[in-house]
Amino acid sequence: MTEHTITIAGRDDTVTAAADQTMLDAMLRAGVWMPNSCNQGTCGTCKLKVLCGEVDHRDSPLSTLTDQDRADGYTLTCQAVATSDVTVEAADGGTDAVHHPLIDFTAIVTRVDDVAQDTRIVYLRPDREFEFSAGQSVSLHVPGAPGERRQYSIASLPTDPEIELHIRREAGGVASDQWANGTIRVGESVELSGPLGDFVYDPSDTDGGLLLLGGGTGIAPLKGIARAALADNPEREVIVYHGVRTCAYLYDQQFWADLAAAHPNFTFRPAVSREHHEGCMGYVSDRLLEDLSTCRGMTGYLCGSDRFVDGVAAAAKRRRLAPRRTFRERFTPARTRDLVAG
Image 1 (tube, rainbow, N blue to C red):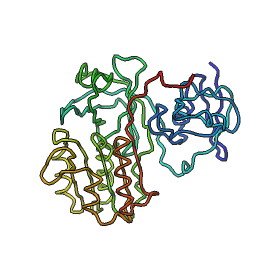
Image 2 (cartoon, rainbow, N blue to C red):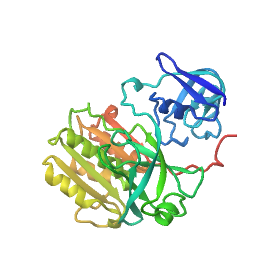
Image 3 (tube, rainbow, N blue to C red):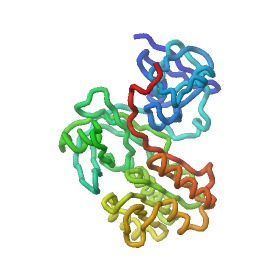
Image 4 (cartoon, rainbow, N blue to C red):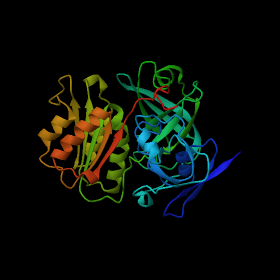
C-alpha cells in the first residue's frame, strides 16, 4: 500500500501515513499533537495550512473548508488524506500540550444506568491500558452500523477501572437510540478509538479557581475535570453549573452533593430553564451573572451545544473571565454526508 510522509514545519516531527489514512489520524497515532475536536469536519479545529505537497480533501464540508480556504492551501486534517509527501504548518501551542497517542481498543459493557430523561450512563471496561487526560473523548464504532462512529466525552478518570460515557438519546440516532437505548447488552464487546480532543484539564494551571459550565450531557467531561482538579488540590475553588431544560434532565445529583460535602470550596449549582426547581430557575448565563461578581483569575471550561457555549461564554466574559483561560467543547450533531464538497 502506498504511503506518504507528513512533515511538520519547524519541528522534528515526521509521520508516515497510509494512502487511505487521514492526516490527523496518522499524526495522533504517532504521538504528534495536532488540534482536534469534533473529528467529523464540522468545527474546523484541525484546519492547517499545507505548505507543499498534495492532499485529497475528500468530503470536507464547504461550510468549514471554503473554496477560498482551499485556494489558500488549507485543509481539514481530520478529513484529508495525503496524495504525496506533504509539509504542513505547526499548530500553535502544540509542543507544550500533554500527548497521548491515539489507539484502537476493545471494551466490555459492564453496566447501563438510566439516570435522567432520555439519558443513560454506559460503563465500559477496556481490554488494555488506555491513557487519556480528563476532559478528552473516545470514538465509538457503533455496533450494528458498519462504518458509523460517534464521539463521546469521557466522564471518568484514567485511574478508574471503567470508562464512563453519558449518552443523550436522539430519536433515530444509530448510536444513541438504536444502540445505547436499543440493542446494547451488558457483556457485549465494543470497539473504540481514543483519546481525542483538546478539551483537557491542565494540571499545571494551579492559579485561581475553576468555573465549569455544562449544558445537558455537556456535564460529562466536567465531571472528570472536577475530580482531577480536586485530587490535585482538595482546597481549590471549583464552581460547577449544570444547565438543563426541565428537572427530568438533571442527574448525578448525589455525586455532586458528595463532592461538595468533601470539599469546602466546591459548589454545584443546577440551572433549570423551563421549570421551577428549588430556586434554580433560569439559564446558566443568567444565574452566573446573578451569583458571581467576578470571574477574574479563574479558568473556565464550557461544554454543550453551540447556543449554550456561546451564551455562557458571553456571560463569563462580562464577569472578566479571561479569553486565554476559557476553553470550549461544542457538541455537534453527526454530520449529514450529502452536505459536503465533491
